[in-house]
Length: 242
Image (cartoon, rainbow, N blue to C red; front, side, top):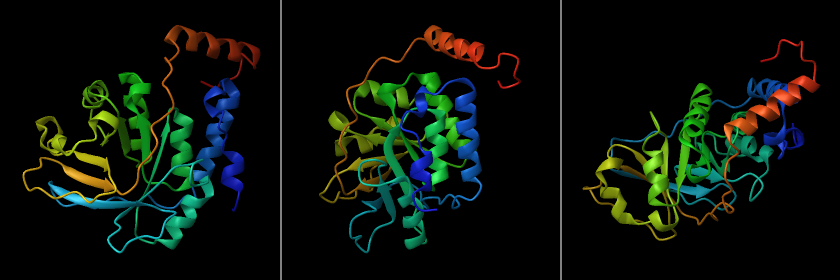
């Protein structure tokens, strides 16, 4: 198995169209069949603190959750290895994904959650990717850098974990009424001081994750539609793929 996932995973998967994209999804679904089972993060009722650490470091005894990023500190194959080594800990993938194929990749590699850069998506796409993940048992971690990101993330139906980043990375938000009952991811090397007045559960990540690259506008639906139609015209227009 070593190296196979990395060989299959294509960093340009978002540029695939038509039949090529369909084949890629089928290959990923075949890998999902023998992927490790999804591990849930078991928590009490809020408020609480869960301690999370990067999987590639020497883990403290209080570690309850592993965090990693594909292409930064981990390869795709390593996620399955870490789940074998740490037989009870969930592991979340925190490099942001932006396509259905990348959500499938996350499940195939054995990760237990995936991250979405809220500011880089519109609400319908956020909702769609979150629901794709839910179909495979994966919660979404909604990365929010600005108040506008947070407002958008809170509009997602049955939304995922809220990741407070950049200008939002302040302990004061744990009292925000709109976060009541939610799970919030917070980066910080210094341990948080638990407060029983918090309205949410907090996952503290003892690491600092670089912010995503500068965001680019998403293509308009018209342009996307035109690209897909052209691809199907060039590639067996009488086929039954949808």
